[in-house]
Length: 461
Image (cartoon, rainbow, N blue to C red; front, side, top):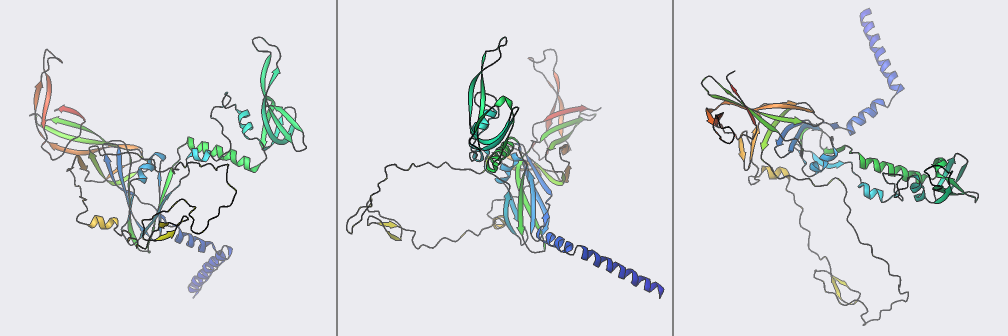
């Protein structure tokens, strides 16, 4: 009985502690649960990598998601254009792909046009003028000027140049040109400050401070290359489903090297290796790797920056007629009769008829999805297998999964077999007159096509 009473006492204490925790922060668990339900950020690992010899890579990500999934993919500034023109997103379950969004902004030149002043990168020259150029462009702004002699508050009027007599020194002109900041005080007093004696100029207007801060932020964003985050969302039920995201990006070309080992009878043993480089910020863990030779057409198109089309400015005529225009029945004072070619009709100002849109029903929207095209027999998509020739291309499919850490390179074996071959002598009088050079004649007895690469020959040991 004492043992049972002890168990009951412990259970009551645990319940009391849980109740006390709930009273201290009663909404903590509720808020955490709501966040977990609304924000379901998941990760799609890299499952397939295809490297092309023209300097691009096909990346395929696959993973299992559930509910409303949000996938964040990070890219460098130089990769975004390739991703935007090649990304394919497929939800293999009953989910619905939402918008694929990324952080974007207007080009720095367009944002700079909204700022009412400009500062050159190199200050102190004749074109920029340094501090004098900045202050002259802030004409009318309220400032607090602190110099070595006085302090004053007022609005900037101008920056003027004066000829000041300098102390006579050797190799220096007696008259020097100095710039002065002219400020109109709140009490009506106009004061001037020598720029060489000014310690600080504090901007008092909020709008002016925002313009200066915006100019600094735009200049910094134009100088550095920030990373871009692409967010892929998929709406679906709570059941697990597979999501596929693929795209192409620039990548180092893969290289090949070969080794030939001759046995005692001179029979060659052939071994080939591919050198691949993972220069990304993500590890390749157990990925299906393929190497494609050839040079498919590839290009870069600037898609990430918003584009603005130039529109002409039509000036308002200064000689506008202020007399009223009177239109009488039967008299056409318009521009003439216009004839429309639509099925609808509208009355023109000059008595003519203008064509309308008509009553034609709009065509139904296309309902063919990518999955329907892939399932069709006439889709033109063929599955590539290892060692298969694809038109002008040739693909090496690595049978075993490959792992390459980020910022690492690896040697991947692509062939290891015995070949037909024999030792030969190569004589070229223009290269070597006294004796021929040793050579090796190989016959490719495999089904593979080998890329150009260095070959090292070992004869026995």
